[in-house]
Image 1 (cartoon, rainbow, N blue to C red):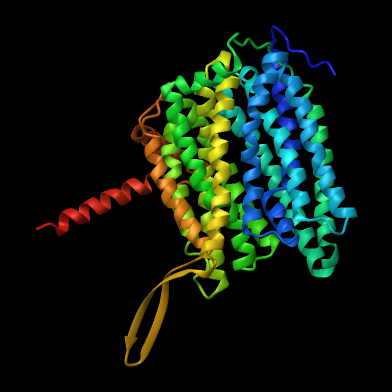
Image 2: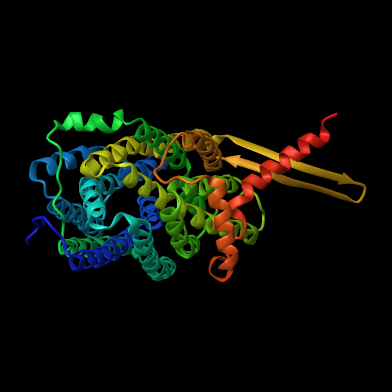
Length: 490
């Protein structure tokens, strides 16, 4: 394979590269779906994993990002981002095949073996990441970043939806008819994921790379450079606090649905698909508005919605009827999909936007390494807290008594995982204060963006009917509280 960078890329080569990256994304998405969160958690629970081990599995993808410094060193030494990204992708995907083989042919395969192989999967993927990000920053025209990656995400999520349904139905069928082969099915999933991922790395090698030019500064001097940038430090502070708060709670949503609610894997996958469909229907809009106005404004609009979704998880399970819990779960997943599509896209784009072109890989690696530290601590803290709260319960009820009727209803019921959800939501709310001082080029005030979005949504109601007025719910609530406070003052 000829993986050398090119001094100049023609418009045709850029377009061809953008198409190749789309296909590589589909291969990566297929690999991720086979080994995705719900399937991985289900496999780990089947192998006897406890809360701390579930937290460790959830922390591996982010913990290994601290090794992205290796990627900077490799790029400085060889100045070939494509080769580093492609070869590390091959090294990352092969351990998935080993996971499948070990679980398929060795009956005593343990959770420790799964964690061991997945460590190398995430390790090499983390090394490939900064090279890929820097490569994409130079390959994709800056004015198309939001639209291009939202389109790429839309294709990936569509594939994920279709494939997840098929895999979930297959798993439930095997679990109900041939439960002794359930672990074998997961093993085959990992083998397929590894093979598809390796093929995706080969496809990626066909995308061209424009020549990059790095400064001659020492690597540790380069590493300190982003930390001297006040605005970038502010972004790091917000991003770190945000991911720490979320990762206390979010890795345990699937565990909660499986163990506390007893939902089958197909139900969980359908709920995940509902979230992804909501994301697919709205990510194009978020990308368009992020390019036209600012990523920071999109985060300020969508993050409060997601925080409210996390709080809503505290009320799942307090109903005696399962259909009531399922309705609440559907609502949570719809609004989670809408909000996270905007948050994730904007966080990625604002990092790319604030990174200087000549040192993009350094800035992005520092961002990923620092946020990885806090992100990886979150699930571990969550696992420890889940064990602590296992024997603790907070129950708040409302009671009505009359001569002919007596009723006691649950208002709040916190136990084990529900405590994590509330703690995560409160910390995420506090982290929003750190977003305020971040400055973005071309930034537009949140109220201006909200007004323009509302006008656009009303004129395109058929396309954006799901959004409605959610972009202003928190402002309306705040105004209502102020009105009530004024009305009760003497």
